[in-house]
Image 1 (cartoon, one colour):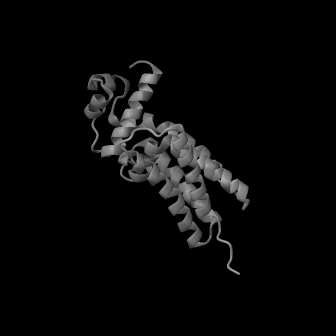
Image 2 (tube, one colour):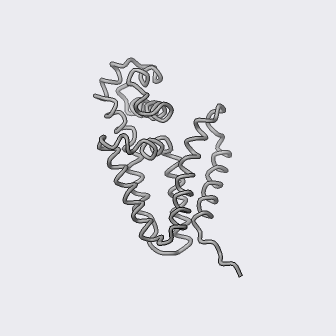
Image 3 (cartoon, one colour):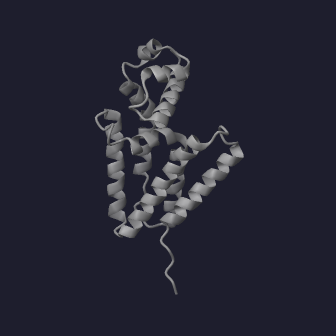
Length: 191
């Protein structure tokens, strides 16, 4: 368990457990068992369940910070489409961590890493609200972004078929990008 790849594997198992049964429902013992380790092996690397959670979600939080910073200021459609692609790629890469800090962020807000994610999400929401004065546009944005995050996590929990093939993954990415981008575009005025 001393190699970086072993630590990453343990973090991945922890994220899966936290997403499946919630942070409160997962124990270091159950995480260790799912990873094929002893609880003492996990404790050797992480002093607590909170420390393991922080280590597991920090890469996603760093990536979220980059996504938030890339939100387009202008109304250029191509910029918005590029943002949607970056956001969907972020969700695809970090779906379990996103699930944790979006769905359990308020409950876990005393953990500094989760608080950082909450702060980023709050800043992101404020940024969007400033640029989308219409309540309809803000709702459309929330449904598009929240729905994409939800569907990625839910699909993983509902599927018994394992990981998708590369072609299926590419099709899902393209469909998500197209759907989210279309939800975020202003409808054309009726003539």
